[in-house]
Length: 266
Image (cartoon, rainbow, N blue to C red; front, side):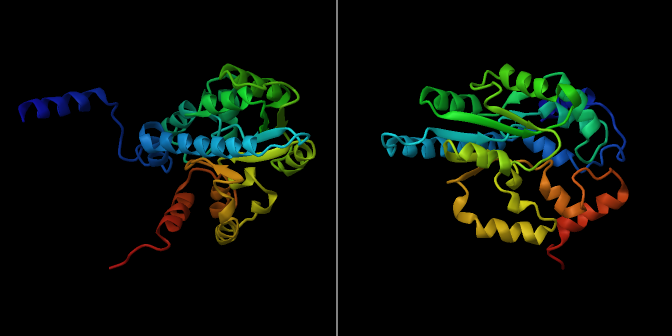
């Protein structure tokens, strides 16, 4: 018991001291889960395992003269993780994604490969399945070079101008996906946001997104491989009407209402 008590005291002395007000942050629980939960990493492995199973089936069923196989993937929070960026936002008492700090962080090339991504992409390369990276980013004139550097630093295959598309002025990936589909048999799409799969998910209400996800339930794990992202995405916009709402008490109340809209009451 004495050892436990001493250990707890030692740990508390090592932690930085913050006021209760400074500890209030809407991102904290989600970021802590992303940073520490084995379940978070397991979901990535599960997603890539599903994608590989779909590819293995497609490879077995290929016929002579058929179009080459391909995978279309989102980049951020799908193949590349930005763990240190989210920790930075918590330290800055930011409740939501922030474009200006993100642009500075991206330039430092600190992204890391998501769990299972490298292994899956290597499988694609070994089996002549081409991978197309389609991302929405805008860090100015160097946006494309930043994206190439991030992907290349992770050691991913097919990192070239033919396979990497960066959309600076739009988040609509459907046009690029359709162009790829004209020449390739696209087996799966990978993403952390339903918008990575289809433009039809660009709706503004929570209930609309939920309804569409139910309509497309047969596609998940087959055509669409979805990865976990509790920190940002179009689900935030559906709640606030803005993907990057400011950190203030009014928005914290809106977030609380979203979390408690079906709460048990006694």
